[in-house]
Length: 426
Image 1 (cartoon, rainbow, N blue to C red):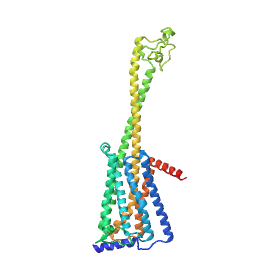
Image 2: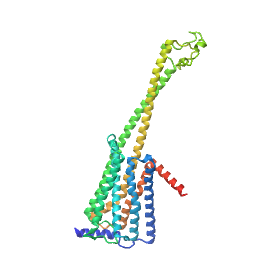
Image 3: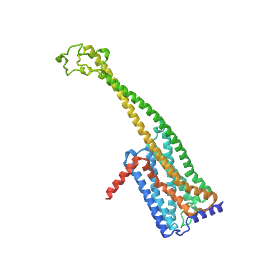
Image 4: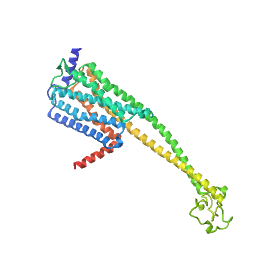
């Protein structure tokens, strides 16, 4: 087994770096430009995410706290991992001290592992929000988010840091050559499989499963909302009809009360008698005439009994009118709240889908190559190793783009921050 591991390790190290620059001058310039640009994009994008959550109170949600943790991990990758790997790649050997090599490997693996765990937490959090809408929000808080984020970082550190630091030496002597920098831990095929399963394959399967269920739950809630919306519209229509009928009733009189009279029945009223006093509770002329049928040419003043009856019925009718108006307003506001909630839910779901897809697409090539090399003992060309490893880094640059494309609030805040920075530079 020891000879097999040594052969495997030698093949991997020789396939990656042989101590000399494997690229021409033009290739070095091209690689430096591409990797430097990618590092700048990663750093800028994740700084924008961190600043956006800090300056915009609407983005300070539990779900975005998980995105904040992911942005911190991606920022470290853009600042440290990308630049050191570019240096190692272009030089063809490790030009720095061995201690810095070990430190870089620890930071790189811990941060990458924390990114994966943060993605898993984001998917799990959204799934619980959708499937446990009553029980889960009761203990979903900023403190809970901080504990989960801390647990993700701690678990990643415990999983990678001791193993990398301990496996780099054997009997107090460093096993990895000083001019090379790679993880001795991955020299064992068994360890390679044991690390890729919990750090990529298992989280990927869980995330895909959670998202499929999340999508199904979202569709069910959307269908339920559409059904309820239809019911609310019917209810709103009924209330509208009720209000219109009540208004018509107020403007007309009850035929049985005989409160409207034609001039042929009574003579013209005395102007002084019909003069309105300041203390009148209702205007008698308001009940004269009906929108249905001809308008009378003159009206007699109603009797005290009719006046009292009208006041009572008008007061009761006003109560009904207010109740119906309140119900109508409540239906409209409830529909608006549900529409906003559905829109917010769909935005978050789209963001998670984009993040999960970006993770799977960018991380799959390297992990597939690692498993193939571990099981088949195949020497992987250095170009494939380098491309697969850099694709993992590309994921850190893509994540902020996913937030901006799928979330309008993030996009507007990004634009505001960039405009502010451009004005200061001018």
